[in-house]
Amino acid sequence: MKKGINIWSFPGSMKVEQCISVAKKAGFDGIELALNETGQLSLESTESEIKEYRKTADDQGIALSSLASGLYWTYSLTSGHAQTRLKAKDIVKKQLENAAILGVDTILVVPGAVGVDFIPDSEVVPYDQAYDYALEAFNELSDVARSLKVSIGIENVWNKFLLSPLEMRDFIDKINSPYVGAYFDVGNVLYAGYPEHWISILNKRIKKVHFKDYRRAAGGLHGFVDLLAGDVNYPEVMKALQAIGYDDYVIAEMIPGYTHHGEQIIYNTSGAMDAILGRK
Image 1 (cartoon, rainbow, N blue to C red):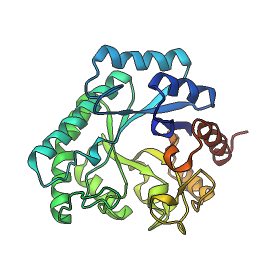
Image 2: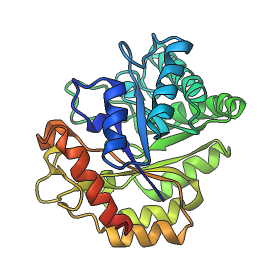
Image 3: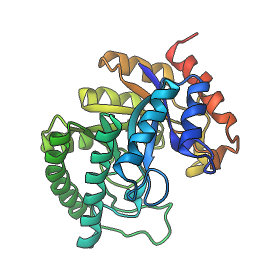
């Protein structure tokens, strides 16, 4: 497996180019960039600007593992408002196009939400309605993904939606596209389940993997902690990944705002991932 880190792990004041450089110095094989609404690597970016990020990574000797986006918390594919759903689909299409320019094979997409506790006044959508909206969206977007040869990874998040590995598996199977699978986040399921179970059930549907850790006793967002400081049974996670033949990126997604380590967390995380992966 290859060792990556998500750009959200870095202090928000750092430029994309700086993050790429630090990720390389810290010993990562790849870095996952993220599509923003404005600013660097955003919906406003031109093709030539996006190509520069690819060149920066190439010059540093580090791969771009994938392309994430946090925009789906604002523009949900399952919103009860048609214009919001349309905007969300347009963002997925733009993310796929930018991923193709960057030369990455997978994008991270939040599939929508029934409700979100950590966003004040977030929209609540009936579960069956959210399911239908999401299924309709991904059926449409799978054709775009196929045309660009970039996969959509549906992430399991705290969205009160696709709550079990069985439901996630069946949802992906209904779309029935080799270009739509799971972006599995290890830490996000710990409050209500066991990541090793999800891995064995989702199996070959897994496109990419996020590594996080979580302490159940803390609860809420405060439960997210540094790798190896929480309750994730990483030996079992690794066994499960090896059992399904997963050999792609495992990508750390740390949250500096919760851990207060600044840039140091990048180096700490690299060491923790070496321990998890059995690297010396």
